[in-house]
Length: 327
Ligand SMILES: [Zn+2]
Image (cartoon, rainbow, N blue to C red; front, side):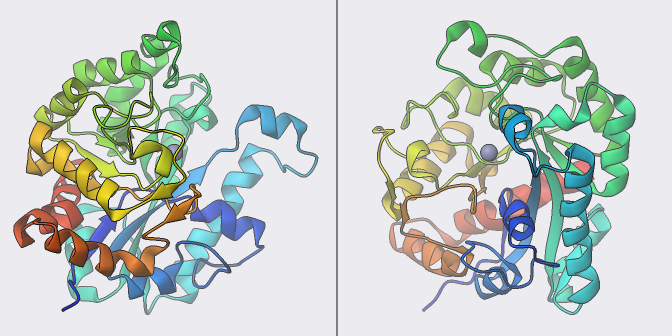
């Protein structure tokens, strides 16, 4: 019996892939882990599509980079065109009402997000501009320091660095706008500032547990409990380097995913566990290689002792609750 759990995936990097393939929409791409067809095969209810900002060291060297503004507009256009040209199967989700209507629509929902707040350039107007464009979750950091703060790092000095003055003020402003705060990639110091300053639940869209995986990208048990206390969720990341004790592993099995999910439930409670695959942002030999394999994952998790109630919370309920609070 295949297990049908409609799910919400908090993170993928498919938009930049569509751009490099010069595609007009996200409907059918070549060799990506996610596109509208694969997501529908996998019974995805909603997928977050990140505008991933290429890192500055890359941008400064690339001759063909059109500049941040043109790049963001190009990704945004692919997202918008998908809804325009494939409106029978794909719809944009920007409000709690959109989310509420989604299951009965039979369509795949697309939620626009942004990874690396560097594009904000320390400006509240830019934040508002991205909100108006449809961005509903923003990862404050990626792997380089920016106007919000410092990234996760093996260097304790960087890791303990908190948010900048702008970053601190932005927390309240984003909550006011209705834009979710994503702490994946953020330094531990920045994470604790978000815990202190936020009044609403927040996301770690694609993060795992440091107790099982010593990578600085992963979250300590203390951090998981703090995120859960605030009503937040953390999406399970399928990247091999973030699943196991051995960070050099290049294979990601269902065993690793199951252990990571069980640990966050044991530490933070059932309400904090969610899905954040990181498809099209990760490599390696994956037992769940693309979105169409998600029913197989849920079936295997059932076989490994996860109850239907637990899987419903992981797949959909927890993330829908937080989105509903924020949007
Ligand atoms: Zn990421």
